[in-house]
Image 1 (cartoon, rainbow, N blue to C red):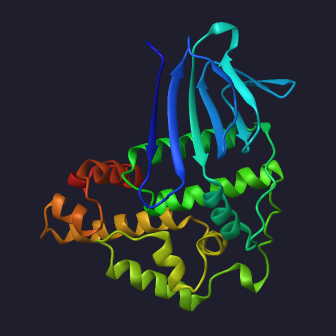
Image 2: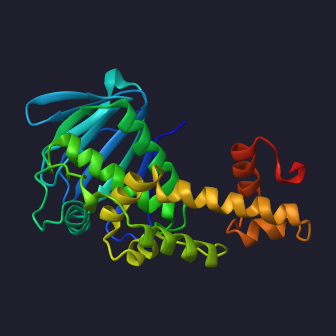
Length: 272
């Protein structure tokens, strides 16, 4: 297979560019970027030289590269490797950091190689989800994007963790009921993290933290279950086709509905 790379921009998230490539003969000569790079290798090993130090980027490791850092990259011993990258503009990083910390101060990211297989795997799953998504406004993508960037920046020491405790760490019963009523009324429609956070008068990341602390699930997992529970009620009524039920609870892809239903209840919708 020859060398090649593809880039993708997502509607709804200006300043982010996803990269996915396979390299063997191609070498990244010494260069720098004007944006922030988060790099992950899925197969093989890339050797990076940053200033006078050499690092090996392989599966389970995360490369964090701030703007202006001079570095290179090539396959270790000339071997092939696959590389996935998130490129964040300074404006995007500033917006995200403000949302995560409540402070307008730019995070102090330094070039580093993090050994964290669990976080690397989650970032790769997010990269794949973003590659498959036409935009970045889905509830699952929004939630994972903010949560994983918080974990990465906290892990790298670029930001301080936000304490979540006391009465302000949870959602009130009024907010919980408001969320449920809204989601049931709009179940057939697209529901975003912005929608849910606004119902509680919170920013997206504070809402995420409080929701998980209160409910014990992410908003996406909770909403998915609500959709599937409503699907069960509609299927039991026997008045709608499976396709009608799927669309009625917010699944526009019937195969996705069938897969989610089987994972939740152990049978296909047709057997319920």
